[in-house]
Length: 116
Image (tube, rainbow, N blue to C red):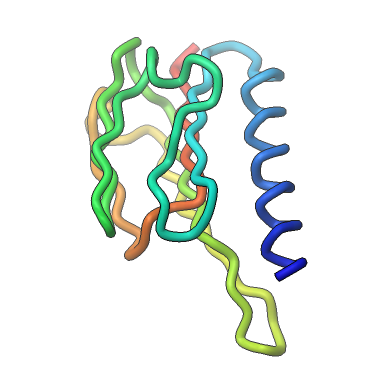
């Protein structure tokens, strides 16, 4: 349990730092409070990106221009020996104003970098 709480705090801290220190373009960050929960926006992220969330996929639509990078982080797990986790990074999406991400579960966080 301690390990999961530590990972959550680190993830939330990284998301806040990314929001505060973004250079060039804007950054929109969404995070979930726990596994299986829907993500909520940090700061004014919901003014920049609209999310529609299901159990496995997230549909995103930019409200503020072209997205240059989408980063999705999954929830960390352990197999008893190793800590496991994953992320999906999409650079220069085919459609820079809308897309779908499916990592097989509700994500821990998503960040959207806008072209600067």
